[in-house]
Structure formats: structure tokens, C-alpha cells
Length: 178
Image (cartoon, rainbow, N blue to C red; front, side):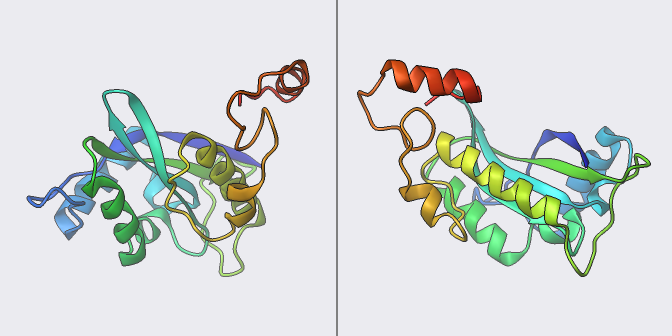
């Protein structure tokens, strides 16, 4: 299973500082994405991360997957826009989206499937866990209860003030930081 990354693409804001989701704005976004990727990634499937880029870097706010329909039809549905707009309404920064496209064994973009893609589902879950470590206010709710409540010192929801030899040893083994 091979996945390819896109750049983080800026999403236009409208006059009210929320996501500009009219057809023309979204068409410009997808044309830019396809041009940069060198293929029609907008018609592909995989995982996407909505983030906000600001002076202190980039922070993820929502992780989603496109598996039964392509990115261009999945990423800006009304449910997703609600999450994105809630994230950007109270903070400064530029909204961006990063695509992680599934490829076939022959190096082509994978296509949507009515049965879904188990590898895309697994990758989304893994990325939600990673993004929750970076941003405890991540907008994802589905399947995050255990990820939000589980405490594994040195790995997940690290308690403050604990920096022992055992934590450092675990981090060395798994290549993670608190």
C-alpha cells in the first residue's frame, strides 16, 4: 500500500472570514491541487488533514477520509465546513488542506469504492491519534473517546511533570516524543 502526499494548500476565505465554498473558489483550489500534484489527485481517495497555518507553525484541526467518493466531493461537504469554520472563527491564520492519496500497485491514483478501503480507514485512525497529540481540541469526535482518555506516559496524553528513564526508554523504542 503506497500513499503520496500533496502540499498544504491554502483554502480561500470569504468576506466573513470563513471558508469560501462557492463553486468558483473550490474549482480554483482543486485546479491548483491537481496542477501541483501532476495528476488529478482531486479525483483520488485517501486521507486529508484540515489545518490552520499561523505564525507559530501549522496545527491540525480535522482529519477525514475520502474512500467512497473522491477528495473533491468529500472534503467540503456541509458537515466538514462546519468543523473548519468553527476552527477558524476564533483564531487567526490561514486554513490549509493536505491530501494523502492512495496509489495503486501500478502507481496510479486509487479510485473510490462503494465498499470503502480498509487501509484508508486505518490510516485515518492513526493520523487522528497523531493529530490529537498535537492538538487536544481536534474537531474529530467519531472513534476518539479512547484516544482522548487513554494516558500512556511518554506516548499519549502525557501527564505533566513526568520525565523518567522509563518514559525516555519507551520514546526511544517507538520513536515518539511525549
